[in-house]
Figure 1 (tube, rainbow, N blue to C red):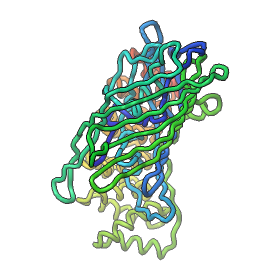
Figure 2: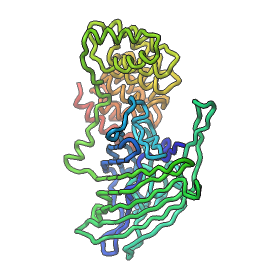
Figure 3: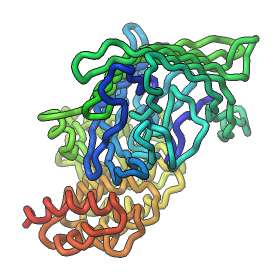
Length: 491
């Protein structure tokens, strides 16, 4: 069974770090003091020691404060977290796949942790009072304390004044996905909810200046059992640092484990989480947009190796052809580029979605003008691995013909994140198509358009961005102001 605790516009980062808000009676203040119009950026690192590998997810999360007044504090959250997996010593590895960007911890699959969607595509929003009680939020309630919505990653109810410890016992629900097999090799996923009981304790330590350490211990057990033991169990503890002057958490650290019991085996996965508020040079670096599409790494090969690869691409042997497809994407193009491109365009028509995926990936390196229209056609592919590879290839090929089809994906909210990255890679050639999204699109489309324009805008976009800076949506307004800086510095 695969468990997806974080699903679509709901959750993304495990809150195992406690992210706890206990403050002692001796503290000078015990309230959140987020400032309206401000952004708070936190670095996140999650490390899970899996049976065969160590998965490390790193990235930054930005909290934007839309409002802060007597009615409450309203925050939205956005971020980018990527996962790298390293095999343990002596353990054989398989070729990388599109699933490698997904953080898996035991039976848990954090399906929205990364660029695939969820809150990283559309921000979650939460409204709290100054004690951290949730007044309003997007997404789904009844979530475990140990795992929380992205919008509440650094928010917890602060304890009553005069208390040095604080205990919570809550009911919660884990969202899971069970495989429903249609044949021995094919299956669909069915959502199942597992009610659970959770106990959390916070103990406030001695303050050092404005900083208050808070120790958290937590234990979660599902009501569903296997052999008399909880199907899933989470245990751990951490120490978090609350700044009573700033009214927020500065650092959160957690160490624990996830236990999954099945009919045949029990899997225990140790996990650590650290979250830290960024300031100074670290904050400046975090706010700098990353390259939308890193250039594929390629190396030259000998003429004999190239001849062998071309022969394998033509082979009827599926195994040889598959290996050649993966290999050719890592090879520097040479005087045989036209021949290889023709072969890859032929494979782009394969009935096998993974052949189409790998052919598109290789066209990122070997493709030219003749590859653009076939890749645009593949944007309608029913298999998302093949679609995503085509989207990325179009970004690498930097042909203006791809701008409108990619912008349509953003407008339709279909593969919007991937399409946005490729539009950024196209640069000013995509500007007109993106401006249409800004001027005619719905709220989500306008948000995405502003973030794309932050990377590619020229002076052509200045007027539209000036208007968007007064948009009724706070995020559109904020993103437009950021993009305007790029436009005013453009050509």
